[in-house]
Length: 394
Ligand SMILES: *Cc1c(COP(=O)(O)O)cnc(C)c1O
Image 1: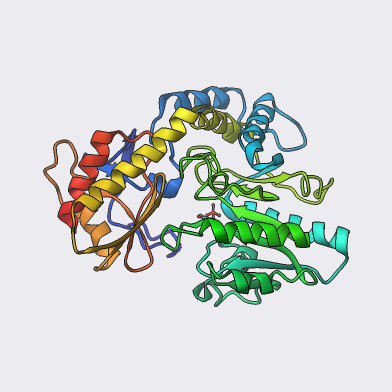
Image 2 (image 1 turned 90 degrees about the vertical axis):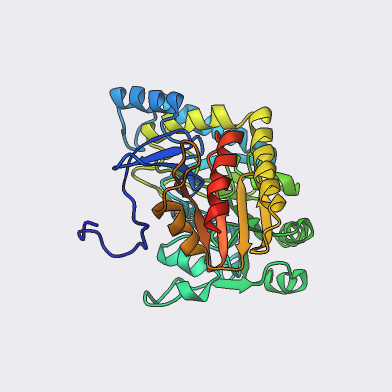
C-alpha cells in the first residue's frame, strides 16, 4: 500500500480496477459482489450507463463555474431535489459537497433561526447518543459518541446528547430557553442500522413544533431512497424543518444538500453561507440521473422488496451466530455473535466457488454488526449469490 496517504483508514487488502453494476473487479481480475456501495454512495451501482453518459456529456460542456453564476443543469437538479422532498415539507435547498458540510449548514440554520427570532442564549443543539454526523470539528461535537470527542479540542460548544428512545429525557433536554434544534438520524447508520420508534419521532416532532425548536433529520445515509421511501422521515409521517442529504445524492460524485421547509428556508441570506464546489454542474448532472431514476414509486417499492428478500434469506438460515437483524429497505444491520471485521476480511481474501462471484464486499458497524448497503439496482440473483458467500464466511 502506498505510504503517501496519511494513516487514517483501516483498509482491507484489495485494489480495484473497474466496476459494473453490483460488481467490482480487482487488479488481478477477481470479481466481488458489492454489498457496500462505497458506503451507501453508489446507489445505482458502478458504471450505470445513463449516469456515465450524463457525467461525460456535462464534462464536455463544463464541470464547474462557481456559485457566482447559475447553470441550467444545477437549476434543474435543485428544482427536482426540492420537488422530491416536498412531500416532507421541504421548499428550498443549499447545495454542498458532503454530509458533514450539510450538517454544518443545518446547525448554522438552527442557530441563526433561533437568534433572529428569540434572541441570544438559545443556541443548543440536541443530538442522540450513538449518532454520527461527520468529521469536522462541529459535526464531531454533534456526534453523540465520546470516542469522537478527543485529541482535537476545543470542540464546538452547545451540543447536548440524549439516549434514543427515551421520550421523557428528550422532553427535558429540549428546553425552549436554551435549545435551537434537534438533529437526529431517524435510522442511525454508522452505529449499526438502529431505527428510532415512530412514537419517539412523533414525540420529538411535537416537542419541537410546540417549542419552536427546529426538527432536523440527518438523512445523509438513510435518504435518497435507501429505506424504500425517498426520505426516511416520510415513513414516520413527520414533517421536519430541515433535512440533510449526501451519500447517495449524486451516485458517486461528491455532493451534499441541506433542505429546509417553510420555517427555515429563508434563514440564510446573502453571504451567510457558501461552498465553492457546492452544487457544481458535474454533480448536478449526476444528481439529476439519480433523482429521475430513484424517485419513482415502483423503483422505491423494489428497494423495499429487495431489502425484505435479503433479510428473509438470512433469517431462513437459522444460524445461531445471527443474533438480531434490523432493516429499513436496503439499509440492513445484522448483529452476529462473532466479530464483524474478520467476516469482512474473509469476504475479500478467500476465493469462493459461487458461480461468477469470488468475493463479497460488506461493511461493519461497531464490533459485532455486519452492515449491508447494496446498490438499489442489485438483482435477486445477485442478492442470493452474495448471501451464499456470506453464509460460508460465518
Ligand atoms: C456518512 C455520514 C455523515 C458524514 O458524511 P461525510 O460525507 O462523510 O461528511 C453524516 N451523517 C451521517 C448519518 C452519515 O452516515
